[in-house]
Length: 208
Length: 340
Image 1 (cartoon, rainbow over the protein chains, first blue to last red):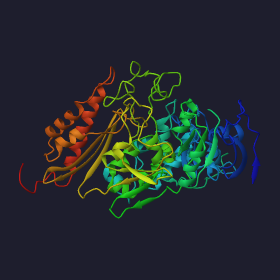
Image 2: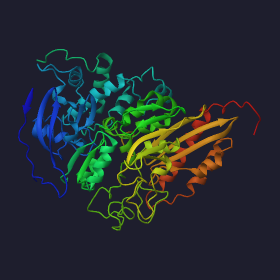
Image 3: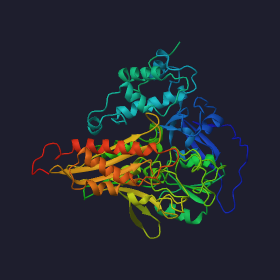
Image 4: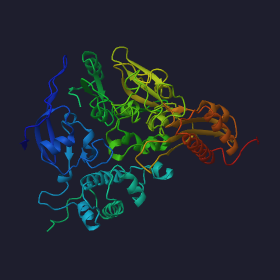
């Protein structure tokens, strides 16, 4: 399915500088399983494309400099800061935002359920980034990635991945800041999800 | 951000030709630093040449026993590669100590080497900076310079290089492979790739205009060599180094057969501690011997008004890392031959 997005709005319409190529590009962005044909100013970040052009406002703009993680999405299954990615570079990538974590019928993913169950947020602004980051992190952990706090012997043992202790979870999610300080509950929610669910498992049930 | 044209290169030749035909072009890898600098107005490329589709995503085991790492490999993929984790733990540890999971997934090996300093005055175009604008002056020298250099700085620049990975590469005697499209490839020792600022702080590295970092070459480590990275920072995770240490140690009959020590966070480039290495080579690495060697190296430190604490941090880190390695290195704990 090809969806036509809203016409992009730009405060300064860019004209090419002398001797250079066009400063706009046609890009097919794949987001949450849909393809969006866009004619973009090359300066548009993935975050701005999601929020301003595709009305996917779940991903949040906190710092806009890759320091807070509120804009975290999954690009080809891996977590990334969408504020530091230029949309023009992502032709052919599969992007998943927080809107794509739940099933089409609204059934929340196990991680989303765990965030509700463990009260893993207060204001909620960082939550979409925390969720996408945690999904990516759980995949990394399942693939056996060590972290900075993994002891040397475990890190060198490629057959036995490190257990996701609270310390490991905190280190692996350090790219997501929470100004409310809900870290303990976030850690518990992620730990519960890691212990009981595969992160990629389909949503359990519709939420009523 | 200034408008720019976008070119996606699919071969090294295509990239270098695009560079030659587009004045004011910059290469982009993961872009985690470059895009940020463009937002700050520090970088204003007329054209971005995207290198992420170049065939530089591979690991290749070399006949020598070393490992060739393509420049487009992500920081995550390098850190978690089984051969890196088992043969070069210092490199895996350095990568995992840097940035966040999100950034490591996107940042490339080549881009990590070419990232710019995080000196706040370099990133703020309203402040004078000799690195950003040669001759403009340095706002950091009399400003907030707690995070800045204590070794090898100049009257023109006191910035540090922010990479953790590069510090491990310097200690591993890795090489950087560069390609210019015209003359083919050349190799530069990782320890010589970054420059001291001197009177040209605008030049971070020895890379020439249009050259592309194509690979990092890791030499084989001799059997028995152990390595370790340790980093001190203001918060427990996701912060640049105030000081860091990468070290490789190999003992033979209790004596140091090979030692490589490099500091991060202290200088405009990873600081390979040649003086300390000279002191230790051939010696039994007792706490006293290690302390003397590290002190001899750091005697060259010239701290600024507010960052003398970094010298102590570096000293303690280096002593601790070398002592830890001396305890774990084969041929250390249980002497097999003659006594010293």
